[in-house]
Amino acid sequence: MFEEKKTDYTKSGSKEIHVSSPGSGPWAVKSTQAINWWSLNIPSDSIVIVKVIDKSTDKVVFEDKSKCGTGTINFEISEDWNVKHEFIAVVYLKDNEECKGFSEKFKIFKTEEYGYGGGYKKEY
Image (tube, rainbow, N blue to C red; front, side, top):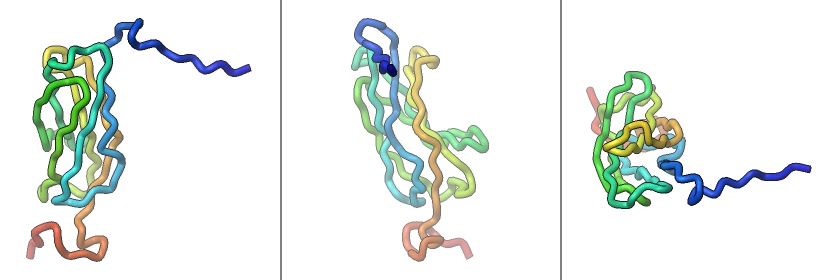
């Protein structure tokens, strides 16, 4: 009755980047998180640009580059990121910005809000 359609990506030849983390969080300010990705039909020595973007302002709050294939880049959630905003990670080919993948949107929090005073600099 219901037949699941499966795509054979090795035959389709479509270039794809899939970003598997970070997840939705929330993640603590000053914590280290990872952006993980994998790709299909893209040479593993291709260069990708990795960014974290504040969805409310479109400001790039983190940027790095790496080789494609399967990859991981760690980033720290900075004290100046707005805890009221949502963020998203994007990984795209340096030579083809249309070939890209996105993480889930994620939120952040200052640890004191959850009963722990460490992890960020208090402003008085």
